[in-house]
Length: 224
Length: 224
DNA sequence: AAATGAGATAATGTATACAGTATAATTACT
DNA sequence: AGTAATTATACTGTATACATTATCTCATTT
Image (cartoon, rainbow over all chains, first blue to last red; front, side):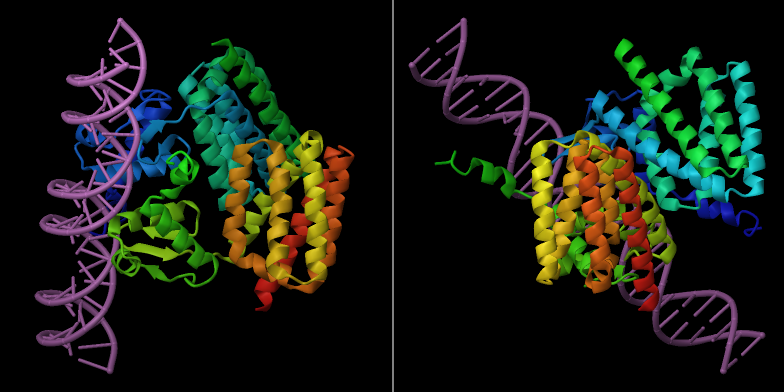
């Protein structure tokens, strides 16, 4: 009886610091906590019903993800990104996306290729149905499968961290209908390169994809 | 009187967690703490004469730098990198080095170009004098100047983090005489590309540089 | 003799208390 | 009334105490 939920049990426990971390992270990414907002340990601890210790640790974890800024003896605040920060992140992400895609062109397993094709089909269906939540999720799945096929944890970790930092500004992108056709074209181009094992082509399309993405995000930031 | 050392005073204070962090980081990078070694909070706190709190926070900082591994409810240990981890890191680093160099080819200011040329001269002199400490420092300076000219903090941060992770394995590289001529050739090639504002050439040489580096580190790991 | 289980031990997880510092508010002075 | 100085308050930094869990030892059993 205990064996049946063994694997569940082992995942059941989450240290409070991780609970707090997830809670705050979510609040920041969904905009419930806005850039510049001060995060005071006592206040958060009271609100979340825990002591300061796990809150402190969670704040430091958030700082590692560049979602929060810590100033010694002054405290934490939700990090506000400048336009330049966004450009910088996208610049790095472009290089990593190219790298990942070109590796995927060489290494991707058959199963993952089938899987990513399915994701793409669903992605385009979600677009047809204008299901924003699903569009975003499937776009993430698409890129995650490429990352998976690189078999490179460091690359995956860094890439996903950059994605998290951009999350707040990403919404604007896929919300705008006009960007969709281009994104679909890019995805298809990437798939084609993978199928043809053409690493150079893959890197090029991926680079163009991020470049387009950059333009779009910047435009939406400037217009708001 | 108080004004005179204002700037000093403002730098004077370092939270204990940072002191502990620096101490442990140094111990790990210089091999005083070996991979796999357990890091127990109480023990470290006693040895360093502080309480567990700053030790805990320092350990979490080290985990962020991937120098330490934290397992919930079990504790921390110095992270041991596999050969695959090293390959993965160098793969990412190659892409970032290419990116940085190609940006530098476009953006580097005259002053920084003069500076990096001076560094290279000193680098080659240090080689002639077989001054290992200085060789390593100047190689770092060389790449830091390229990073600086990218004007991209994110790129710089990620790159330097990867470098830190490799630090323990880097020694072997520059220690081996046979690798030196190639490194010099690469540096010169990068400088030439920057002077000619040839981004593609810069990216290519940088990529070759890291590729060579990778081969070398792997060989030295396998041979020991 | 090996394996299992109970208990002891030692570690991490969390809460709380105290110390020190930065900020805000208030008062005194110009 | 405005500014500077001083006090008060509130926050972070650090230490410590308690709770919980993992590990180790040793005894017991097969």
